[in-house]
Length: 437
Ligand SMILES: Cc1cc2nc3c(=O)[nH]c(=O)nc-3n(C[C@H](O)[C@H](O)[C@H](O)COP(=O)(O)OP(=O)(O)OC[C@H]3O[C@@H](n4cnc5c(N)ncnc54)[C@H](O)[C@@H]3O)c2cc1C
Image (cartoon, rainbow, N blue to C red; front, side, top):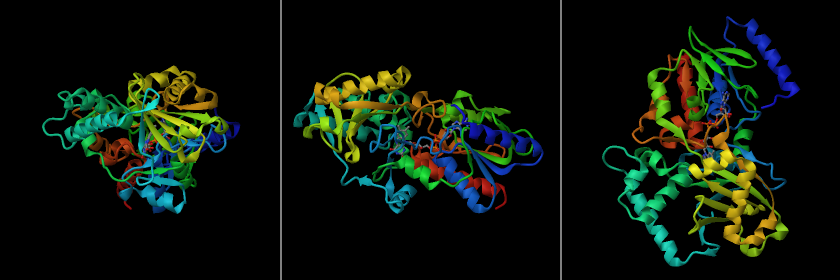
């Protein structure tokens, strides 16, 4: 990431200040990462009257809640989180309502249109598909016995059910069914989903006034002695406690070094989790070249054509764009192949649904490559089979001064913006207790 001249100067001032204050703490709390968890934690610390500094590697806040606006006016889409899941208890429902953001709820959101080789699938095919999903839900609902993978749980089912399980884990968890824990999947919260037009922008706007240092990747946390020394290319920030909200993929990568190493129990928790590769590709469409039957506000599942497991959002909120969602190893391969190859694959997918004419309507595109993003290293956390306890283990404070938080630590609320927010608030409450508030 390149640094602007202005941010370099700000960085130099920060370095000078932190050198002078070497012995004293620069802040009560250092928060690492300005995603939903870090921002919620920092807001709670600030409300308490304690001092807090957020260090963020990217040049923006919001993390995996990010509204992509690069496809031209009126074609924004959420490259990361877009649904307010389990809305009944999700704080973002009220925040979205108060901000008057456009939403689409369960009652009005589009029902998937099943397309097979360019034509709408027959009712018999739709029934077969629904039956497959029904059997998978029954198998995955409150699984008995020792934990196993989703693939193992459905191994005795017929081909339609096994295919449904693969589609389910790839398109909800971003991962292959043999790598995800049934017990963890079962403990995830459920409820109403509200589709937000600009979830990332909502998160960034809601937390616009916090003390965040952008373009400041944390490379190390030294927790010998009393507090923590947080190392960045711009200098060291000393604080009494650190709330670390980087994704588990970043923790596992070793790009953020802890001195001494984190305890074995924390290391095992990180190793018990992994990152899925849920991926979105936005294609800008030229309205004049779209035909009425190219569907508005529709969610399209393609079946019967081998290849990428994916679904299409056509003209969401009436905007002239298509967003391809995919997950699992096929999505990983697209992220690794790069944007041009991913856009070509998304274009082929669109053509396989609508026919060759739609190719001329595509004017550009964007790949949200979370899997190859060094500050995400995947879409969101999954628990490996047998590692149901990892999320809770991640929440245990280290030496009362390092508090890990974020979607991965959010238990049943994991994998979501709402879960990250609640977990950031949970970590802030633990830190405030430690600080004597
Ligand atoms: C494609 C996709 C679709 C999704 N769909 C939904 C959805 O529909 N609904 C939903 O609720 N959730 C969804 N999610 C999940 C949701 O976006 C995340 O769970 C949530 O945003 C995670 O918040 P967080 O604060 O835990 O982590 P992050 O948002 O990742 O925040 C961590 C921050 O740490 C920063 N960072 C990383 N390394 C460093 C470092 N070394 N130094 C300093 N900073 C660093 C990162 O840049 C980032 O800003 C989706 C995610 C993806 C990727």
